[in-house]
Length: 152
Image (cartoon, rainbow, N blue to C red):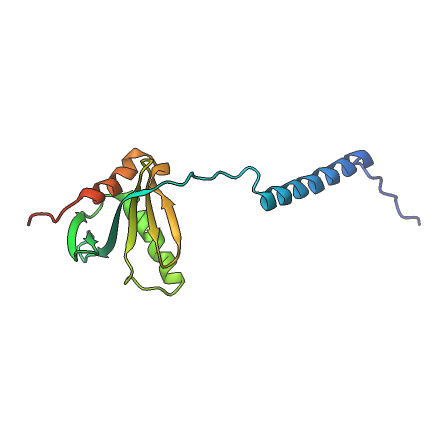
């Protein structure tokens, strides 16, 4: 008995073209990464306002916002509010925990001369440009720049 021969249903030209395409894409991606071609850079700007903040979860589900420089509560996120701020802070806290950092070092909220607002974690070197999340989400952090001790 003889074994049946399998014919290659894919034309050789198509296989060679696909291989060249994959190889070319890989080379172009490597060149772009090495040269920085296609990357977006945020232009340098000057910090016009900086605030150091600590965030503390409370047993009732609220989050207290502390001005770390004066040691006072400047705002409180009521339970179920400020979902964007909570998610952002949760992500930063998770990163600190993963890298075995505590909550001792405050976060840095910065307003830049070009209008941008950023949140930085000096312990993990994480930097978040807040304006990319839209004006509603940025407003929560923008309000913290001018918040004073709430009356009780």
